[in-house]
Amino acid sequence: MSTDLDQRLKEYEGKEAGGPEVGADPVNIPMIRHWCEAIGDQNPVYLDEAAAAASVHGGIIAPPVMLQAWVMRGIKSRPATGGSLTDELYRLLDAEGYTSVVATNCEQEYHRAVRPGDHLSTIATIESVSEEKTTALGVGRFVTNRIRYVDQHGEPVADTLFRILKFKPPAKPDATERPPRPRPAITQDNAFFFDGAKAGKLLIQKCASCGKLRHPPRPVCPHCRSLEWTAIEAAGRGTVYSFVVNHYPQVPAFDYPLPVGLIELEEGTRLVSDIVGIDPADVKIGLPVQVEFQRFDDELTLPVFRPV
Amino acid sequence: MTFTTTTPRLADVDVGDELPPLPIPLTRTLIVATAIASRDYQDVHHDPTLAQQRGSKDIFMNILTTNGFVGRFVTDWAGPDAVIKKVAIRLGAPNYPGDTMTITGQVTAKDEAAGTVDVALRGANSLGDHVTGTVTLELPR
Image 1 (tube, rainbow over the protein chains, first blue to last red):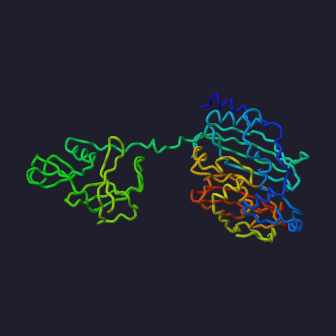
Image 2: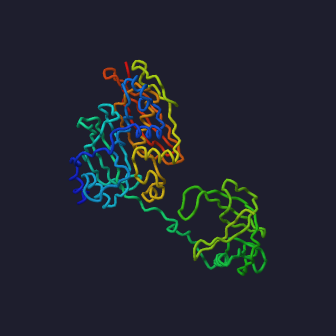
Image 3: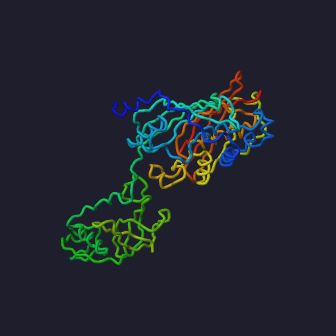
């Protein structure tokens, strides 16, 4: 699909970016030293005059791969108006939302060694501006420039290709935008349990006829089939009867790895609940735990268990 | 790996020869120092907050520095009498602070007439290949 923007961007292709960009300084030893120190490059032909003179180079040369550093603009930002055609193209892409940039390809062919005293300039041609592509970084457009490096006499020293991706930074997920915890399915049988949690109480269903406790909540006593029931408040102490540590699939509302326990309460019933406050690797069967109530949002408070 | 002071002769190098691997611990200082040494003041190479706003996990190494390490990798092996003629690299996974990139490579072609060899290399970090590419080097006969 070709858009108006595609058409506008096509017009840049094959055009020279404008007058040569002149390096701020001639090739010099201090900048070579900073470079070699930062990269940890011990090749003596870059800084040691005697060793360089004895080498095939016949004297100090700048690291060939340092080429681009000689014409970098430095801390000055791109001019808001004017500048080269490349500046204009990048401003257009910025305005269309492609505000981020990464370099993706660099090819450099060196015609001769660059030496202290050389003063380099670049002559750039915009080779291509791609259609919008979906990349791991977001949607973007690849811009390929052919850049010729010339010396102070206009003689070419290198020919290069430089490709960048101008892309739209994806919206950063914000902690406040985290999706809420999934809601429990509340029925008239289990509503007391969740209401209890909201009130800071861990409730256990109790048969009104035979007095036995049961969990999860259900309408009929499995022991005497009575439909009459009430609830008692548990002490909140228990042990890990069994557990899993979830790694996958990951639901955005939860933190992973996620230890989920089957907790056996002192009162004898068991319930499924998150285990908090422990390295998932340290969860063990038999681990003594104590209930606490975690408020996730205005509507949802749930019991969780923490090692004692 | 330290720098080799003697450059191998063209005749001593064969296709398939492996270069000594170059492991590079990617400290935050390294990423910032190399960006500034290459006059690259893009915020993504020194400012973590702005780097994250621009869609990145953290600051990351700039491409000029990747070129720098590629050059060092081959001349650490090839010594002072090697002449780098051509470098072509392609970037993949970013080099974030705290990781290590290890560059490995081998000789993949030899041009007797031109007196050059090609070294194919890759620099891999914990996320995958940061850089893959080829360097053409002229060696003494």
